[in-house]
Structures are given as structure tokens and as C-alpha cells.
Image (tube, rainbow, N blue to C red; front, side, top):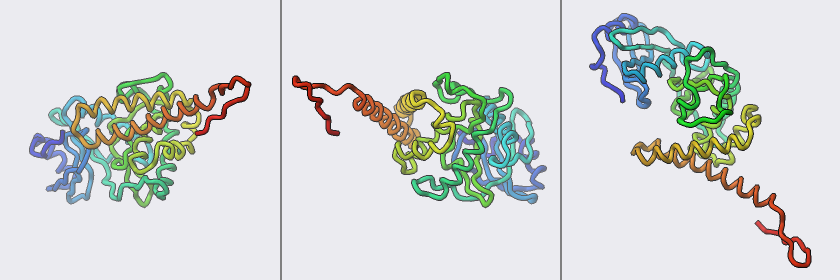
Length: 282
């Protein structure tokens, strides 16, 4: 839950003022809730984006984000400074300005996304300062384990189109996993942007990590993810939670239909008493 800036200790606001050159004003971010404070800060030294956290989970998430933005070149916003005071962790990054991408079928922004994903799929996750697939998603599978650093929440609100390409913000859920997990988590967002489940998979199939992953593994992920969001939806009134229930459900339903059709088509065809094969029309 986001807090007002008045909740910050004086030592924190003083530390921020010193770093931005004096008196500043802050405009809260319109979305996100990993840190108690997340705002665009305008001061004499320029504009920066500041996050501050004090709760155990939010501090841990912000540390993950700090580590991720230092590990990955170009895509995350650059870390400008950070400090700790009276139990608060404060991190300032460059302020990224630009629209969120259009991920609908045929959009030119999909090319930017493909280029970004290609680069990220080759980014190793050094050390152990990351979420595991089980801790991040609430379910796991042996094939989800891996050495790649994934963002794990590439919804359009975390993507910004800039003159230098697509940039990615909010790395609070940085996870060490197999590269294909990032792509599987993207499928529902593509569906939410207007793709059918089949179109989303066809688009993602341009990335080697997807085609190298067994169909059964992907189907298992789709089913478990849909079950998870269906359960969350029953306990939440948030619109985005219900949206994810719908989109993950569409993918899981498409998977079940495809598996059913495959089994139907591959099943032995029955014979009539005369030995003639009946042809099923579908």
C-alpha cells in the first residue's frame, strides 16, 4: 500500500533534498505498490524517480530491484543513488519518459518487445539474491529452474517506449529461472492486448527458449497459472486480478482444447462391420 510522503522520517526527506539539490516536489506514481513511496521527484538538480520502503517485504523487493538494475545493462533505469536511514531504504533512478507500448496484434511496438526479450533471454542471474520460481509464482515445476534473470512482470505498464528502445521498470520481482518462464508469464498480457491464445503463442515462438521447451511443460504452466489466478480472483475485488483470471483462463482453455483435438485426431478410427473406416468430420 502506498503511503503519503508525510510518513517519511525527517532524516529521509533531508537525505533526498541533499541529493536533488534542495527543495523538491514529488508526484506519486499512478500504479504499483511494491514500495511505500514511489514518485517522480523534481529538484534543482533535475528530475529523478524515487522509491522508499520500510516494510520487510517491500524492502526486500526494493533490494532485488536495486540489484537487478545494477546487473542488467540498458533496459532498466539507471540507479543514481541510494541510502538507508531509520529503517527506510531509498533508491533513486533516472526518470524515464515515454508512452507504454501497444502490444496488440500487428503493432510495431511488438518488434521492440521482441528485440528486448532476445537480449534479456541471455542475461544470467549472478548469485542468489533473487526470487525462486516457487516463491515468485506460488507453484513450481523442475523445468522452471534455471540461471536466467527474468523480470517476471512484463505487463505494458512496466514497459516504456523511449528513443533508445524499450525500457523496463519495476524489477521488484526479479527471479532466477529458466528463460522460457518469462515468456510464459507474458502470454496472458498479450491476450489482454488483443491476441488470441494461439496468436500469442505463435508470436512468442520466434524466441528459441519457447520452442526448446516441451509442450507438456508449457501446458502444465498454463493450467497451474490459471488455477492460481482463479483462486486469487475469488478473494479480490481488484480489476487487474480478475483480468488475469480471464486471460490465464483463456490460455488454459485453449491448451485443453488443443490437447483434446490432438488426442481425438490421433485416436484409432473405428471400423464398421464391413471393415470400412468411418471418417469423422470436424
